[in-house]
Length: 207
Length: 207
Image 1 (cartoon, each protein chain N blue to C red):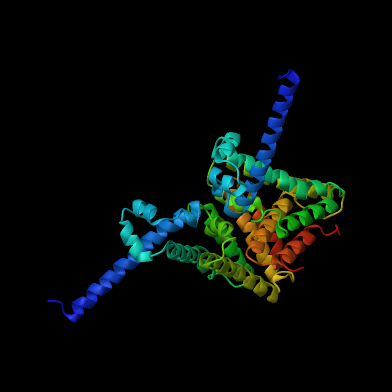
Image 2 (image 1 turned 120 degrees about the horizontal axis):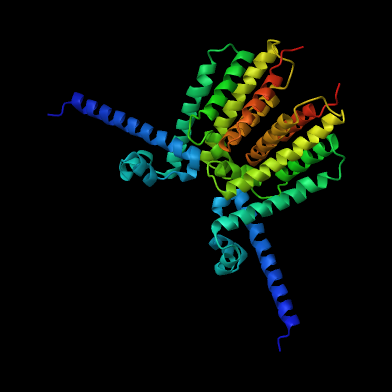
């Protein structure tokens, strides 16, 4: 006999299974998209890779664009967990900026995703294609630069570093880190040293 | 009657026609690849766009990889003509660095190619794909950074600017210019001002 309670439990279990499947699919999708870009995603390829049915994946995500958007969100969550959240343990200002930069370099060197930086791989492809995927990628990239700018502002306000334009400094750090990511993919590790030198210059104590 | 002379003339004419066709095809191919990447190239699409036969294009380039390599070379030639060669009119050191940076910003703002910087569009796609196309893109990107580093070295040697690491400075300028290109594609023009500020900082007269 199906009581109200067991019916609820069955719905819960189904939702839980759906959430787990979504996570498995987006996890693999982030890996693929870091290597081959979000264009490289397809229901068929994911079904093969994960050994689950293509129809099941289609039921979960419905359209390729929705799959791409879910992938972009999953990448953002993984990035925040790996780079942004741990840096919150460091004091606002210079210490947190160093933690953010170190975390970002680890994220590119390790790397967190097999193809390196997810935004480095996908923004150049989507920059000429207006739409929700481009908007999501852009929003996330801006959130990262804003995070850096906020900490530069705190560092200047606290007199830790010379008076500089926090937005320009954040733009510069973000640009250099993206160049590091590309250089690492191309086998050029010297870029890490050069990037650290640029950041050290920006974070030099106020004279 | 076909004399030796007329046969030669006919060969010359055919070679000339072939060279002109190649240039027409690679010119269009550079435009496509700046927007959709070198993966977006196909004999069929080029034949449609240029209203010539697909078989003719195939005879000229043989394989997709050879077409991609010819496209990469054509992009490099156009870039050198637009940015590098005109800067040679300026005196080596700071003046030539300013000319190179101004030329590059124009190249991205105008833009020379409809999708903006050719290397910004294609290096992130090919960075995980070893092969002759990646090697050619990488060689060209390095040539640009070396051009900048050489002029930083001259500027330091002449005492025009403070003693800095020319390779790190060149890396930094290249990184910031690539960030400008991406920001412009995404509709953010403030990046040009921020990039100029970074360059001004590096080119400040020695104290």
